[in-house]
Amino acid sequence: MPQLLVDEVLHPFYIFQIASLTLWSMDQYYYYAVCIFLISVFSITATILETRSTMARLKEVSHFECNVRVLRNGFWRTVSSVDLVPGDVFEVSDPSLTQVPCDCLLLSGDCIINESMLTGESVPVSKIPATEEVLDYLDLKAPSIHPTVAKNFLFYGTKIIRARRPRQSNDDVEAVALGIALRTGFSTTKGSLVRSMLFPKPSGFKFYRDSFRYISVMGIIALIGFTASFVNFIRLG
Image 1 (tube, one colour):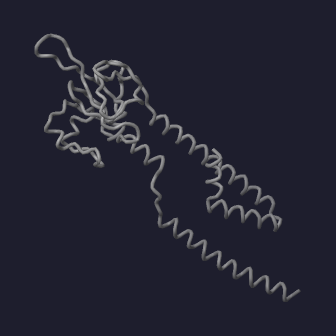
Image 2 (tube, one colour; image 1 turned 90 degrees about the vertical axis):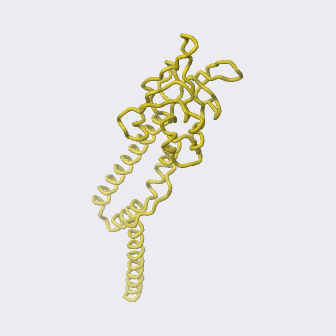
Image 3 (cartoon, helix red, strand yellow; image 1 turned 45 degrees about the horizontal axis):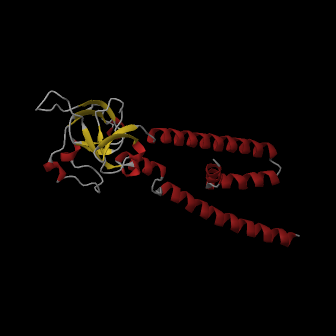
């Protein structure tokens, strides 16, 4: 909150407003100065509240934690999704699992996933187990997933509509649908998206740069006018 207030008040526009308020007060334009001051305070407050609300919604969307059944050292155990690490094999067909807990590759079973929160596509996508040939196209350092791998890849945060277990051919027992964790946290596709929103790259707008040039030129003209007026006042006594 304090940092948001400082960043907003130090905006060039409000610095200009502070200078204007000072001059208007010195010229005894008190009513006008008070009106501009109240409008500026209202504008700063509204901007800060909107920014805080946006950050709160972003935090709510980005945070997800659930219990996951993980196969470790030959035994099934239940751990928090935040404790998943790349290489963990976990059960995708767990009925309590409503969202994909990490970027993973489907090893067995099949799923229907809603990826609208990432791609904007409203139609659910069907996922099938990966084969050895698919692994040749898997590159986790690439900015996007290869189309060949996309049908086997589950993205973190996407909603699981249905996860079906594979049926064993030798008996009538259903095995569990498995996935292997590949990326977790901010390393996931959703994590990268959230990180880009939290820490966006600085972008310079031409209008913003031109505004600073205009203010600089007007400042030089004002300085020249002030100097001329000051010299004239001294000469006239």
